[in-house]
Image (cartoon, rainbow, N blue to C red; front, side, top):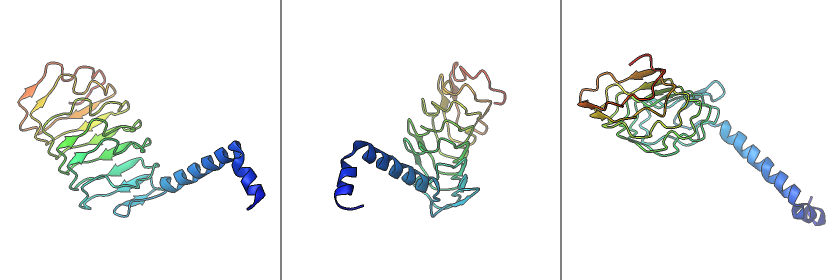
Length: 190
């Protein structure tokens, strides 16, 4: 299709738009079916396990089909903004036993389907204000065994669906604000 025909086709805005859309779809399919080389993937890339790999960051190339992501026992210190934004189907995220000391605002953007978030055995000293915002389906949050010193007012008010909040073994906890658990009308296990 070279020559005058090709030039005419490229001058047609509809053709160019359709071609661009087709390329985006193909690129999306390629990304949706990848597995980071440091991880193991199964169930058509819906289960991704990156345990004990010495990772300092969330790896690139995690499939958009992922529903279960295990990043336990790595060296991650900071959960950066938009680290998981393309994982809209993710239901379980395991980040325990890392060295996480900071969660940036917006770190969990895009996780509309997340129902379990495990952050136990890390180095969090505070519960970041707004860190769990937009996790509308979150039912379980595990913060056990972190050096958290205080829990501020409205720390969890953006996660009204929360049913289980594990704050066990917070040995440095010295202050819990009066409104810390405000808005947790579905909470069953604390």
